[in-house]
Amino acid sequence: MYDDNALIDQYDIALLKLKDPLVFTNRVKAVELASSEAKEGEMAWVTGFGRQEIMRGAYVDLPHLMAIQLPIIELKKCRNLLSHVADDMICAGRKTGNYDACTGDSGGPMVTKKGQVGIVAWGLGCGREGVPGVYTSVAYHKRWIAKRVQENTE
Image 1: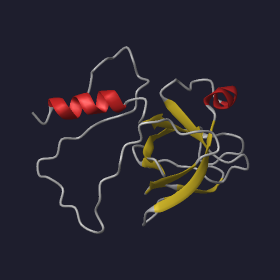
Image 2: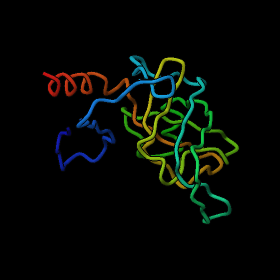
Image 3: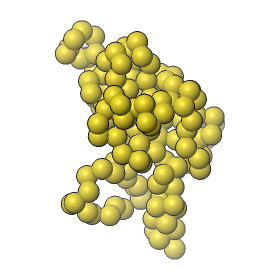
Image 4: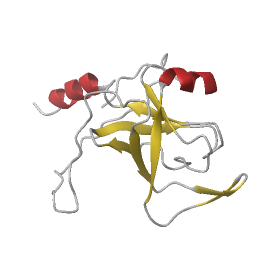
């Protein structure tokens, strides 16, 4: 389910319609979609199976799910560091670097106590000092998500 608009490459979000329903257990659960934006300083968990940079430019694939907790950065501050950050994006990271999503993590969740607030989108390298990671905002797209889900469940 997507809106094919070749003129816009900004949005980094997709919904999948599964052939069979998921079976929820104590280990498989749904996540709430956040209805409000993440606030500056709020801590968010990012998880993924992506690569980890071990030395400048050298990456290693990881055999297990990794998780990192990162502080949300105000959009205005983020735009001072990165020029292509749109209104539907969230930035997060530590000033010291070393902690970030990486190659292969795109599409993974960013979760706070509110629920899923973001989706791993892009960054400049992995964990570079002074360079935050960029995430698609779930709250920004929540109406679009709800509309597409409703259209495909009727």
